[in-house]
Length: 255
Length: 258
Image (cartoon, rainbow over all chains, first blue to last red; front, side):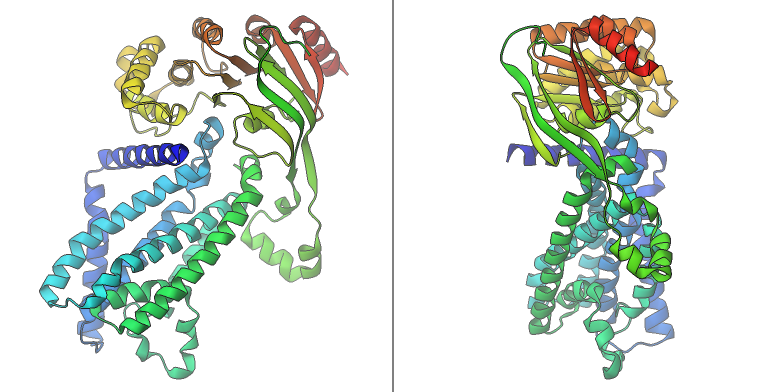
């Protein structure tokens, strides 16, 4: 227990020091963290709702519910896949676990996600006047999203030490998945013969419950997706633990 | 084995074995892996893991007051041994028992966040080196270390502007600010000037007198003769000497000549 508290203290110190270093250099940096999702949301709302006229009763909430977790997963993969490799000198010099450094980067991404969530979701909910009981399920959807993002990013970050082009692979995969995941279009736009693309898409399984909680999807469907998301995340957590146990010694050789 | 001071061991190492898998270095990227898988899938998937033995049947004890020098040619396993003792690496076989706290530093020319000042980096580094102390004690340690480093007006300059010597001063001042049971210093004096090396050596010696022991890795025989009262030599993954510094230095010189 004492070591958990110590680890948490170290993660906090590193996260805030990192933010301090980043935002000191450019004050616009923090604004960009919030502006980035707002701009993406505004442009996509305009294009898909007004230009392409996608028909969905609560499209603005639907899009926001898909876009925010997408940006969280994407930015975590993008930023943190290289965290262990980039911190190689610190990891090799000090008696600190690479996982602490990785956790501090992930916390940084989560803070950005949460800031964007507070700034964008609450006003949109107030404007839309959609307050369904589904909102009660939102904390669980966020927890599953965080668990999935943390485990996948940790796996990629460890693999990046051994395979230095893994970042390009994740980047490419995300650019494909953006179109294959119903973020800006409702899932019922997909023909039934191709529904399997969504059913077997883990990113959709993780994002959809978050989306459903915001715009008021069917509770039964949200609960099923949450269960699937939890199972996927736990399996990935097991994979990560196995990978870490197998590779943690050799990490120092390759850094 | 030579144990120069009191009897209760701080460190007991028994039958330590460590090896690294080296097979996957043939695939250095996902692209390589993909090419190899398409070119010869059976060979790629069925290649057996090969092991490189870094440490083999290592046994020793470190007692209170021991200032142990660790010598060996490059690749002998010195840093891997230190990382095992620091808990950063888990050996495949053997037992490491440490009676007390361990503090290890492997390079002193590293700032956590180069964009932050030396003073700010000192706060971050202290939280990594001393995770188990109160904020009040941390503030005292930082103040003591910053005074000891004599970096004065450079403390508020970004760490990335520091010379190697200044970086070393900051790190060594912090790591030697508080006693611990086992202090591991792996080639850490390299960047410091002679004056500061002597100043830190004196501080480390005082620290050891007040608390535990030190494991000191260096390629400088002169530095080891000055600092240590016992020498361990690693060669080809094994301990080939453990005893008096003067005898060990002769042994090491004969090894490097052959």
